[in-house]
Amino acid sequence: MTGTLLAAAASLAFALVLFTAVRLLGFFGMPLGLFAPAPLAILCVRHGQAAMLLSAALAVAGLWGGQGPEAAAAFTFAVAVPAYLIGRGLKAAWPPEVVVAVSAAVVSVATYAALRMALPDGIRPWVADLVTRTIDLYAAQGVPADTVAMLRDRAEPFTDLFFHLLPLVLMASGLALGTASLLSAWGWLARRKAEGIAPFSPLTWHLPDTWIWGLIAAGVLTLVPHEGARIAGQNALGVMAIAYSIQGWAVVAGIFHNRKVHALVQGAFYAVMILWPPLAAALVLIGLMDVWTDLRRVRPQPEPPDQ
Image 1 (spheres, one colour):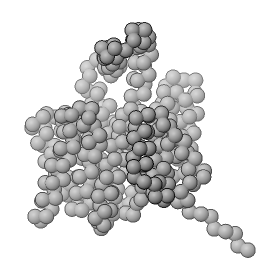
Image 2: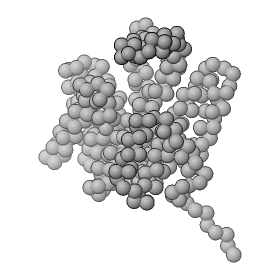
Image 3: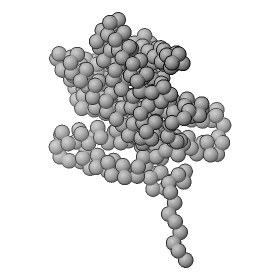
Image 4: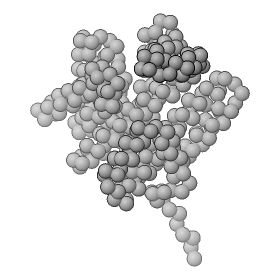
């Protein structure tokens, strides 16, 4: 009992530190916030759902009293619910892509609902204000005047674009949160040979091959001559592209591991990918190529015909 209480206290404290890093550090705290569900997910696996749910309830109650209902709701949907799904998924051998997708959907819907409630004038004026502030920031940083003028002329189309792609942005954030927390929780448990978790290796993971039809359907939807269908297709296509970029990362990481590529070379590759985001498009192509070529030879091979 004492061990469970200590583990619960440690997990709760760690989750709260990671969660509050976003508020305290702003943009620089966001990478830390992606791992906030992991400590509670580990607690769920090692000490049971009751310990995890009680710890989460204490955190929500404390945040409600100390920082208000907004912080309590944010912790519930961005930390507690994903942690519960990840912990249950690891113990029940749920497919990793299902765990991450459901977690991302919960975070996305909750964030969208919070924006609707917090913005009395609606989401679009808020997006327009963000675009205007961003252009003003560029101007203050010394961007050439003709470039700033061009951006101001295009402010309305930019607002429409960002407003219509808001579901994609929210879903991308949820996917990053779910993926980071799932991998870190699994890695911690696997290194300690924790009992009761399903065997899972990120280096051999891949999406079900049938998901390619979802990508194709999203692409077709973007060609439909109807604005609502086209916008839905663009958002769905973006989400599927992110999913296949994660598969592409798994392929690259698996190849690096199998060929024993030096850690410094791997780090340089990932650093370049972060500093030059267009390179991430290559991960999407690698993920798609893996559907047909099975670059890592991780899928079951067909049995040879009888002679």
